[in-house]
Length: 291
Image 1: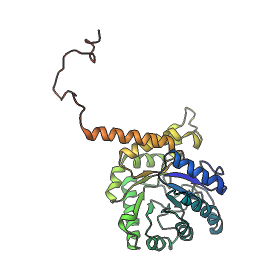
Image 2 (image 1 turned 30 degrees about the vertical axis):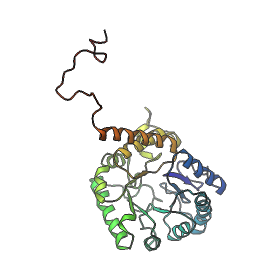
Image 3 (image 1 turned 180 degrees about the vertical axis):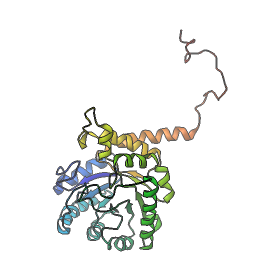
Image 4 (image 1 turned 60 degrees about the vertical axis):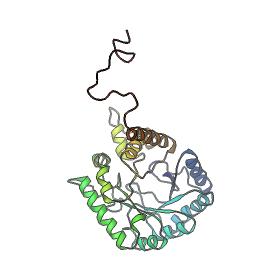
């Protein structure tokens, strides 16, 4: 899932794709680099960001969704507003990615249920205008699992079909670096929710913390793409349905390698591989044979 932020204030690439023509071109470039989905959003969800009004979000998002869909691109709309989701779906979007999981706008779940579109339900504890709110956990993996499970149940009760739900642990949302890393280390636990898993780690603060140099200064967001690709490979290995990234090519390559290794593991030992307990004699691959 490639990201197109049609915003002036995104933490990672704010303003770069702000006009419709540039945003559509960028989305097409992401597809050319290997994106299967393009996630279009018109409202920054970084900590401290001020919400844009509905009219402005629609102005930013709908022309880009329409432009990409008309080119045959599978488009996801990243929004917390039911009205934006509804108009984006009418303009050709195929999936709704709501970081609030339907909590920010009570009309969201009925709109998604009526459309039949897939719906990303993310772990969310509220708006972040005041910073990283409610980020206290005793056992982050268990608590995120339980809260996501409760949210999925609410979405199901609202009429969204079980096979239309995707779950997202919400890395960086009301979480510190240690929480994000623990969730990545235990993605297998989240599979027990019974729904495809989206991992959105791209360029996030916890990667900056991991990469911080001796002075403890994290690198800028756009210098975290190699780290993002590493997380993407790990997520693929852990069975994620998709990864959401800003720079697609490196992640597409990383995921391809992870899948190839997985296929090799599934195929079993290579022909001629010694079995446990076997003691082959000297040969080109031994110290004695190399003399």
